[in-house]
Image 1 (cartoon, rainbow, N blue to C red):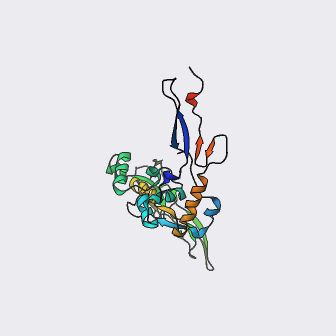
Image 2: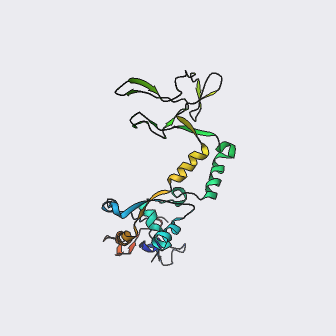
Image 3: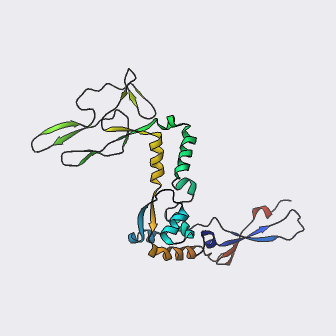
Length: 253
């Protein structure tokens, strides 16, 4: 089995030394600008993929070894999930995540501050969702809805019970509502998300990826080999080599 860069075709790069009397040197280099992607019809084969949660501090090459028996299949995982920048798009390890948070927020006190508020799920008498979980709202958010049953029709209030709530006079960037005395106004179906929890959710979201089932691995490899071949053109040398234009060699003194 070969690694990702072995699939990339070459380009003949013409290099010229400062000595203009010297002969041009042709240097074969990998064409790193050529990328592969999963073809559309393959994406529609539901049985070819499975949802996967990255656990712990697994890196792409470690996951490839675990799933496919070879760490050099890491490019399959990255390609399927359209990951081009592992540092930004792959979940951080515990140590790296901690360092990232402290670098961004400066201290544990800042990490403990409220980033925003979210709703808790509320159901009506028939177990239908009236208010979904996870909506970003202000701390004093409330919702009233009309509930009808065979016996009664009434207006329900999903925040703060029937106790009159003070009017908010100020809001901060996190959506924290305060009354005239500076007290925070919160309701029972709204909860705060700290800066740490916010960053943790972003990092955990990166753990949810798609994996190619092992029996379809050969299809992905065959597609990779096919798309990495050059088509006939004025630059064509072979299916694995083409000439390129070096703008530094044109014109000038």
